[in-house]
Structure formats: C-alpha cells, structure tokens
Image (tube, rainbow, N blue to C red; front, side, top):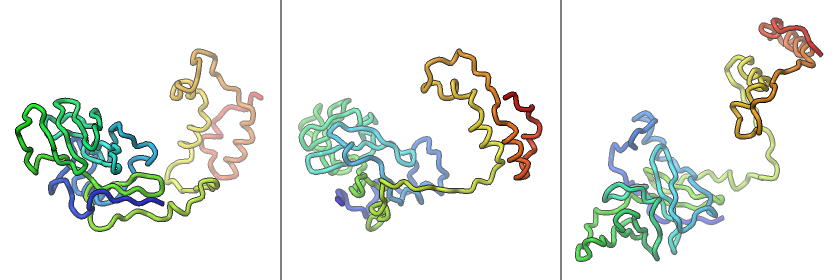
Length: 231
C-alpha cells in the first residue's frame, strides 16, 4: 500500500463560501461533501499529460510531475483556460494559452511575455492534497486534518465479487417492464446492435407461468390483463 500526501491537508485553497460555477448541489450541502475524501483516478492512469476530472461539479486537472501526482483546479488564473490542455515541462505545468509556468506547489514561476516580472505570491493555482492508497488517487476540496480514507478497501477480495441485495420502495411493475421489454433494446441500446430495422415483434412462450407466479404473490393486477399464451 502506498500513501503519499503531497500538499498539507490543513488549509483549503478555496475561499470561504465558495461554490463551483453551475453547481448542482444545494449551497448548504456542497461544503459538507467537499470535506470528504474521494477517489478521482487510478494511480496507474495518471501520466505527465494533464487530463480533466470533475469532483462535486468542480473541474480539476490531474497530472504527474517528476516528484509525484498533482491535482489543481482546471483553470489558469490568468485567462481561465483549462490547464488540462497544457503540458508538463520538467517540473512545471505550462498553460497552453500564454505559456505561463506553474511549479509543483501551484505558484506561478514565469510569465513569458513579461520575463522581468516576478509573479506575486498570490498568483497561483488552487492546489489540492493528494493521497495514493488502494491503487487510487484521493483528494479533498476542503481538507481538514488528517485524510479520512476508508481502510476496508484494502480487505476486499476482488476475485470474489459476492452479492449485493437491496430493497427499493417502488412498484414491481416498473422493474419487470424494463427487464421484459426487449423491443426497446434496438433503440435505447443502439450502440450495442447492428440493425434496428428488423422485425422486433415478440412471441410470448411462458406467459401462463408468469401469471400463476403473480397470482400467488398477489401481484396479478397487470398480469391478469395480458393475453393468453401464444406458444
């Protein structure tokens, strides 16, 4: 198990009261969720090519530097271009728009059009903590104290998937109709078919058995209205 904490998890890079643009979460819920740790990528999928990820409606850029994985807000503080379109040059992230360079800590190191200018300390990327654990990259948008990452994942035996059972408070017809409505497959799952123009009429082969089952379970409301078997 590898654990790497790249940025201290005690200070949030986001201002108080922050909400992502076009946030789909309630204003009172987002900061509560943002204090939790979430996996955003597999460790072996992160390369030196920045790529975008989204966490709680906030766009992030994840990339691998020579000294480890970094996660920052996917927005250049200069003109707002997604930094996931940029590139890594040595130990710096280079914006694809004006070539601004940012160090591993998010601090702007160079502004090419003004080489004599020393960027202010506040001119930096919003960087988030990174922990590598269970083969995943974890981060937190509003870190507080030590990372709270479930350890149970390390005990899961992936070779034995087991079973998951749950109860759903809804009418059984809604679920049965989805499973039994085969004529929808050519359209709602068109990407998995080769021809949606063939005859899709169905032949009921065992309807009587279904009717007896529904009667026994007291669920014959819609089954009793079906036509007799044509088998």
